[in-house]
Length: 326
Image (cartoon, rainbow, N blue to C red; front, side):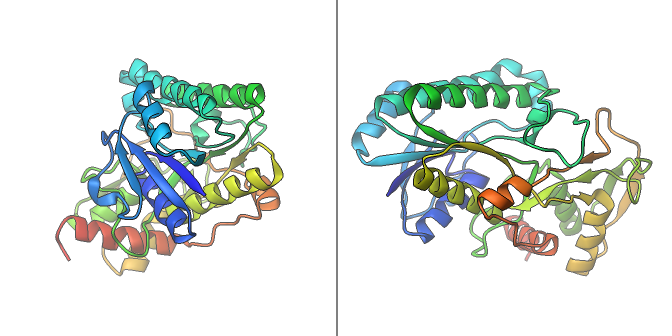
């Protein structure tokens, strides 16, 4: 079976490609390399440098790769503050890009589509843990662009007798055991990589807010290891094909970890002193954000297997190698 993976040279997409190939699938990667890296590309995958908004190029690729049966779509822009300053760019990439990709999927009779969405579609939820049926009120263009893309996918599937699986999640961390692929930016923006970077660089990490109504006063967030995450995408695709069904699932730990828990677990796991300071709250940061994963547990029989400690360890060794400080 041949599967097209968009964004397959990026962090999450490259892990999906590796796992698909390990499971015996043939994989075609489409990535415009704006956020991807050549070193993330699996040597056994067929790679095309192309933008999902380039309809003619996508048609050319689908024509060459005649037996593509499914698409797993990871390509997209994901930085929330950037989406606020560049909203049109985010809608163009994350929403219009999906429109073009679905248009080509229709032309080539693709019947199965898996979408890597975001829990940012929920905005600031009123209930914790978050259910898939909870109100969707995104508070930034990133979340809005992904929610609009979800609507396009549902409409496309209904009109074309096709199937979709949509996954929503918050923080992804860790790397593949081979140590070859991971978050390659030297300026990470997500919590766990930032904690690990502070450990490696011996730089002070700032805990943003310690007076929230949580168990230790710091924000609680959801984390899932990247390998667990992409495994869910593959399980979802296989379930959709086998049962001819569509659905939407939350992914996560099911409980969440506080910022101080992540920091202290890194100190304990790595046996390294990480300098830190207690800062004030960031505007707009909710006290708790984590998803209810009961639905994905029961329908797809998926549960995360990899611990927070292992996320930290794999991230640490990859980032240490990345900065040539082994």
